[in-house]
Image (cartoon, rainbow over all chains, first blue to last red; front, top):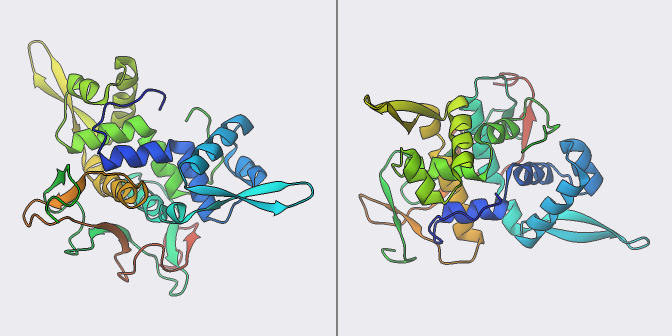
Length: 148
Length: 148
């Protein structure tokens, strides 16, 4: 997104999207969750231009989703690993994948629980009530803790 | 994303991101979930250039997340409403918002259950086992139904 959006500065969706940036950034995070750490691996997997990849990796590092780690001293070489915040983004990626599985009408790969061998079904719930997201009316509170 | 990414064509995350397109598209969907339907409302809320908005609305309509509905016959005027597939995207947006609430360290608005007045906590789980997403090892099955 080149332009600054007008959305309320307290909107968590806008803030989250601002951090993750764009479609390439989400695909980089997906690959990072699959174990990719090095520039050349990301570049080959995604078929992304090196200049684009450099920018996206810098933005994700700046936003604290990835961090640089030295894996060779001479010469100095760095790789990119997920931070705790980057690890925490996995459920979002799985929810996007599950949405596509339900709505994009194509033969897409499925998520399999590695221990049970069963297909899993990623859904979003409210951890407080257990209700599936989207089944109960919600509103936004501007002030954190207003009603908590 | 201008370039075509090299990701496996069966990857549901890549497919989902391809449908939603970009950050502007996700903000348009967020506003649509908040009840916005008309071009001018989207434009004002988001501060997006009209040409950009036209492109994004066309792409979201093409991807079957929004559909056009005539609300005035003379002159003919159309608005954009969420399809079932677009409605189904709400949990993804809430998960992005919840990620930002946990990780972006700022005072962001909270999601409140309108009936109980309690703050809700959006999380992703596997509906089959109830396990929180990211807490058990998963793998991808290339063939739908392979192990189901």
